Length: 190
Image (cartoon, rainbow, N blue to C red; front, side, top):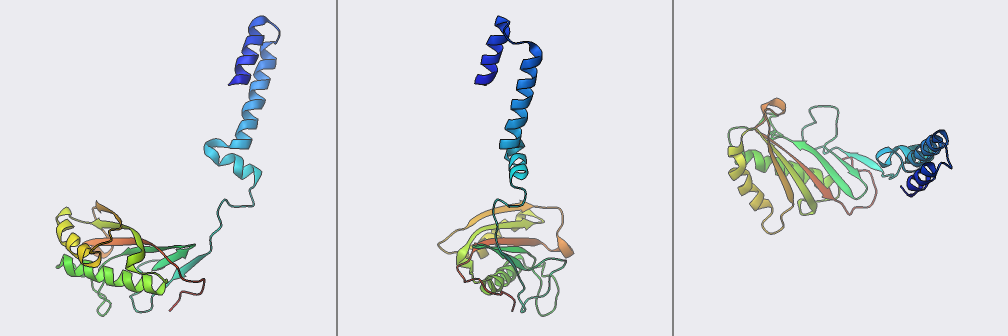
């Protein structure tokens, strides 16, 4: 801005022609974009394209006691000190069927599945910092809250609850978890 004011004042006095000012402003703007970047990313990509800003090891988590996933993803991923648990729907591990009639039982089953995935990841439900709940009907809030209170009697992680149109296999709800882990780096496959 200061450069613009200085050149404008010189232009008004007639000491600099408009073509020279235009070239200076263009060069200054392009230089600023290359250094700082557009939105803070372009410049860094041009200056250091081979070095990512943050490099974290990532390990997929597969819990052998649980049913497989419904698509090409892992039960969870450990990245740095975090465990990202994929959305879990209430699938009975013995029958493979969706539990949809009893929302309390469905929520309990999801929490037990999350407990197993977090255990395999070197974490626990006590280490959960954020929970996202997707429901097909907001009338499920009260039964879901009652199960949350049973699993989190004193500590309360951050939570978002969203009503959605549909969920995989017609499930009544889906929950994903974000937790921290303190385990040493090792394989997390069971």
